[in-house]
Image (cartoon, rainbow, N blue to C red; front, side, top):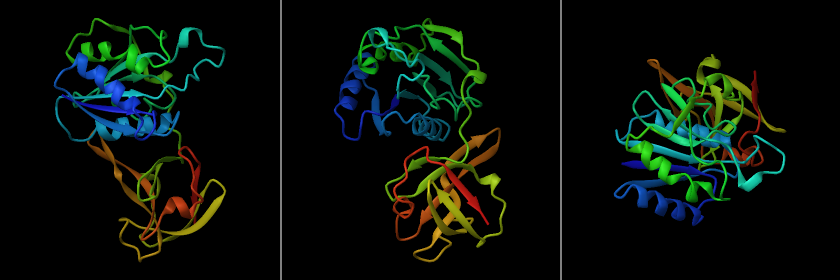
Length: 261
């Protein structure tokens, strides 16, 4: 079994190792991969749940996600209570188990065949993903659904926010929530892009490398998945030979992106 552990503990944080130990106590022999997202970034969490869950991979696959900013209730929290643990099953059989926070489930809500709350404690530890949730993850991964509670309707989950930075990769490319289908332009059309307060000229391209060195491309990126037989692609900002992240003054995930002719 492959378990993708997506969390905002921090790159290289030993918290990943602590949670992995508890998962392997409950699921000996599983392989755990780590994906670190920025603190409290439910948008990045949701993006990677979809990217890893909806694309081709091992059949026996679980995504365990924990990005819990505890913003569902801004009052003082009793006993470290946080967002509720949920379960979803994708059309390819991939299980998605983690807290329902912000945009964490937004990218998959129209894909999941079923979503449910999981009947486990919502409090009891500051570190619930290590101390509370792993036995429930193991039970669900092994086909024991006795912990499933009420169905979670897609309508209660927020839509993917439009025109945002969803991810910044290691090359400084900015992956956005602008659907490629929303940009109907001839290749090589010059556009003006704004990310936050920073503006730059760019060239629309149907493939990122179809621009000269030093040119900012606005193109369908490498991330996406299929939905009902249709490929879903997202626009990406790519500076060939440089960093779009640096060009736009190091924006954060969830920063607003806009374009015009």
